[in-house]
Length: 249
Ligand code: ATP
Image (tube, rainbow, N blue to C red; front, side, top):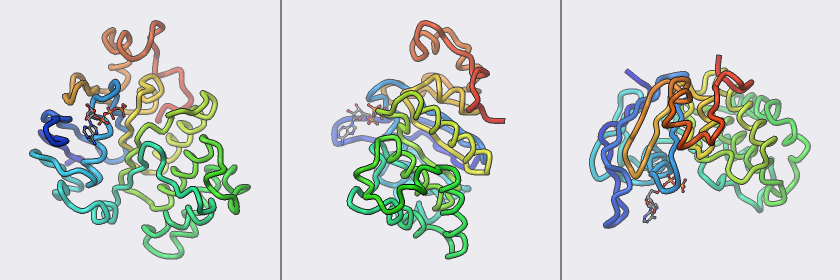
């Protein structure tokens, strides 16, 4: 049994069908990437898994239990934590206060403190910004805060929507390095990204979504080596997943 099993999922926005019967599996301990161009349905997939959208048909099972259509708070209590596109941090609260919000899902005060200390070790820049209103952080720091907050909640499954969006390449490399570390420490990750090159380097497996349907799937190394993927998503130079320091073990 996989940690997350999505089967034949269809989701509509009113008369618009966004997902057309997609199926995907995320095994415990893995990073799985969902790549695809604008409007392919990547965010819709994550929002359905986290309970923000109700599917018209199909199933979503987490640890063997059906979660499709459950309330978002009930799904997050089970350990499925989403970092939304745009990060979802509270601008008027300080860095510290935003981190405490992540702690609401931690099981007790001891695990909250441990999680906070570990998160600040992963993102040392945040330790220097604890009293600062989060809205005044740079885009990269805000993304780090969103990840740190999710990390403190100790998710079994972390859902990430476009963590690289709008960030400078060097910051993106930092973010992906930390994602590899979070995964090595045992968090399973489902990652939505337009940056296919970096996603395929980080992920164990990947799915390619186009106009609401899965077009390709497989181990990331195989997908990164495919001509079709190289042409459509990796630019002219193609790419090898082995180049990266962010590659999982
Ligand atoms: P992007 O990378 O641009 O965020 P995506 O792959 O995440 O794209 P989705 O945001 O899931 O794509 O959108 C999938 C489809 O559903 C698109 O055609 C989009 O226009 C449509 N869609 C998304 N949100 C809504 C909405 N609230 N109402 C109507 N249609 C929507």
